[in-house]
Length: 203
Image (cartoon, rainbow, N blue to C red; front, side):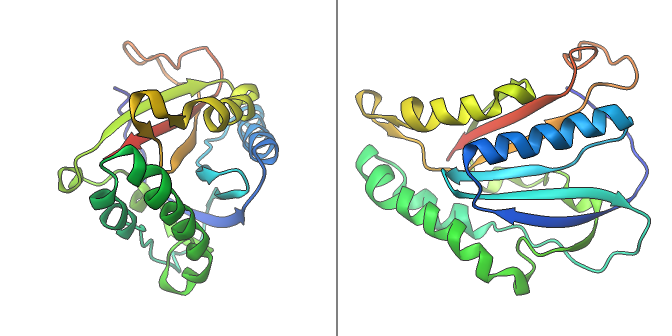
């Protein structure tokens, strides 16, 4: 577990949508490597549904007042979970719904969902009521150079597992993990360089 106390600060968020796997990998790599060279933190992340259907959010720390309020799209779990309990449902009902929900978020910026603005960084911290939606998650840590290849393998070979009765429908949450600035007991992020975290969840 990596625990760190940080001072309150704000971030300016901007969004790029529907990039190819190659463009996403290149963009995230450039953001992370530039941050490493400059010795600054990196907070950008990706919500990935499928090839050409994603959201890349660039988060840059700024010395400016908050002008926006984060509105997490929690309705997605409510929408997908009841009809995500079998392979047939997952592949032919839930996955199209998940892609449609991702597409629809571009129409919801006025509601604060993926809307450009300046946000309080602490609003992006994990919630404390995750028990409301039980789920199983796996997190992979890859080198920045390997993100595009991972997304390719995931789409081509891992998403659809008919023999095990599972089709992955939930969005991949992709974020950067910068190396530790101070020694942290049992941390895997001491001297390995920046890593990209890819979270796969299912509820």
